[in-house]
Length: 370
Image 1 (cartoon, helix red, strand yellow):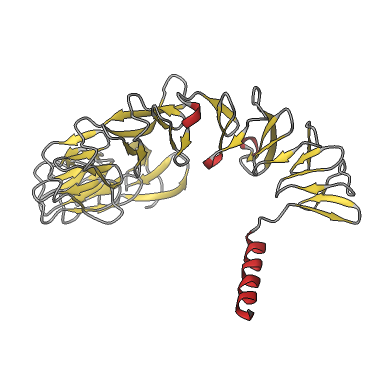
Image 2: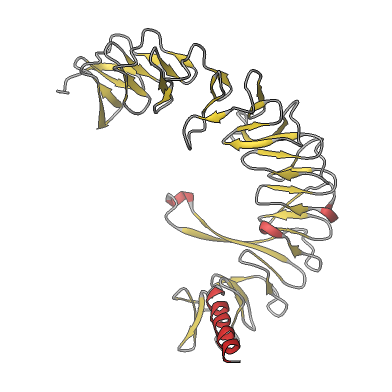
């Protein structure tokens, strides 16, 4: 009995410390939120609902700010969602870009059209009511509301299709759809790669998904980064590395996800590195690599480069005994012997004895001593 009492006391203390502490407190007859007095609040009737929501006989509150809600029926659903008998609210406290993300602003929004009576939370801050699904307080269309299920913060499914960032993955099978790691997902029929594609016309990023043609969902395995295999092929994102062997493919270095090799070939992302020596090849930095015969930038060899004297600088710059390079391109007439990086100079990041450079381009004569 003593042991059981001791165990219960531990569990009790654990539960106590696991509860999120409310930001509200009452001192000397005044309600405070994080030490700021909530002047409108009635201390005698005030009730803290969770760490950010509260209410009294007059008002509901988010982080100490009154909400235009029915306080008698007002309930907090989590740290963002709350509702009363007729309305649903989504509230955030986000960093303000106008103040260079140094301050936070409260945003209290009534969700137009949300049905309070049927509104319920789902996992990963999704929610739904009898007519709509919601993410971060914004409704979005789904093909089957009754079976809509969030799988993680990025993917979801219903009985019809899978979703990537609230966007249906066309022709996917919702009943068997599941996310993998990275941008990969699959169902019983196909494998998909999803990413946020930049839309040049709007400046926004658009959720995009594409079928990996020919991939076998049963044997499909994500390696790491954007590489994957099935029983017969190796893939980079949505493309097949046609000559790569899935049985021997491997990364050259831990946490270096741009270079892979099988027993006969080297690859940079989806490009085969031609004429590279597999046994002596090593990755460096800034996209540079070398073997005993040549230097490479990504998948391309640098003509007349000298691997023995080659040195990577930074910012895309590198040099050997006879050349200076920026992002794999030779900077003509630059002096490798005196070429150095410079700091804290306006529109200059490098220089040699005769010239200054910025982003790999000559900008003028050098009037300083390097």
